[in-house]
Image (cartoon, rainbow, N blue to C red; front, side, top):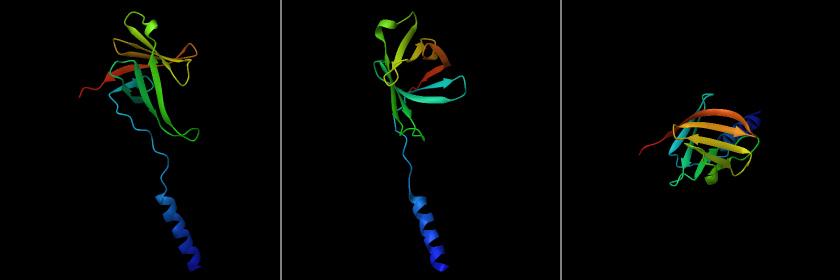
Length: 119
C-alpha cells in the first residue's frame, strides 16, 4: 500500500513539472480590439508592410505566427489592404481612421479598431 502511494505521489510530481508548449513571443507595438470583445496584439513593421500576430498553441496546432502582408497595388482611398501569407483568401483592411475589417472568402468576419502603442 505504501509503495502505491509513493508511486502515485511520484507521478503527480512529474506531471506537475511538465510544461506545455509555449506561445510564441512577439514584440507587440499595436493591437486590434475586435467588436466581439477579443483583443489581439501584433507587431507592425517599421514600413507598415507586414503585420505579425502570435498564434497560441491549441489542441489542433502547435501555434506560431501569422503574417499579413500589404498589397501595395490595392490601396483604396484612406484604406490599405493586407493578405495572410498562410491563407491567401484571408484579407484585412485597415483605414487611416483605425477601422479594421477582417474578410475571409469575400465575407466580413469581424470588425474592430487599431491601436498603435507609443513608447
